[in-house]
Length: 397
Image (tube, rainbow, N blue to C red):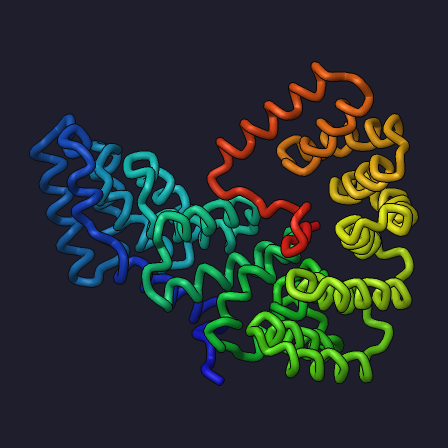
């Protein structure tokens, strides 16, 4: 099996710098606008710029940084100066100053993928995880992952951030890149294992006493993400022989099976509840799967348990609202779905279910409003979520 280009922070930093070398076209910043190149003191600025470039090319980072800073004080609209200053601050592990420089650069060149990626990695090091995830994902959308090294770096950080923020299913999607490419190493398997076990940590923070268990869970999930279901099944069986009371692993197995084998997924969801009867996410997914099998009577008690255990989980409220609606309790369904919408106003499935509930209650104006909201969501979403009413699209929690 090939080994992923992923390592400790220092190696990550060196690898991430490849984004600069591989994807930056300085002409993009140099040609931002003619106005961006003007200086209130042309001769002074031009001399500082020349000296700064010379110091940088000579490897005198301290002098170059000082000169770029002086030049930028005279002409803060000089994109290249902010770019080079950001590079040098980043390579010196001065992430706060690097982030500031990249932010100035992005104010001048908003769609610069390398600068967006590097700002996201600065935010990662500064513990600013929500902004970091936003920048990493935007950088990917802008094409910062144009070569395999950059893709590995950004996808790995994306997966770590999603796990840290509790968005475990999305993290597994990010790690699916590595599984499809058959790229793996010990640290990556721990990262996948943390998402599998729904532990919101980075690999470096994993409990050493549990690291072997986490990696074993990660290996089973990695095999399933790679498409080798037979090997994955054996790996999961091996895991449960050694760790029969581990929570969330049956759930993750079922979640990943759901798009291709709903019956097997339901069996794993039920197995999870034997290990962890109070697992709200599993109750939610089981309820949804039963709804998709047209078994609302069976889904209702699962959805009720989910909503009781996790009243602020939008998917739990949605599953309960749908189950109530399908079993004829339109009034309770409407209230529940309104609660769900308050928790997640941009959830298309909630709007669809609420439109139906209003219609069945005779509230046609409200139903029309929800149908319009559905139309607006489908038109404005740049990356539509999969429709959860489809058998092949399980909801992310």
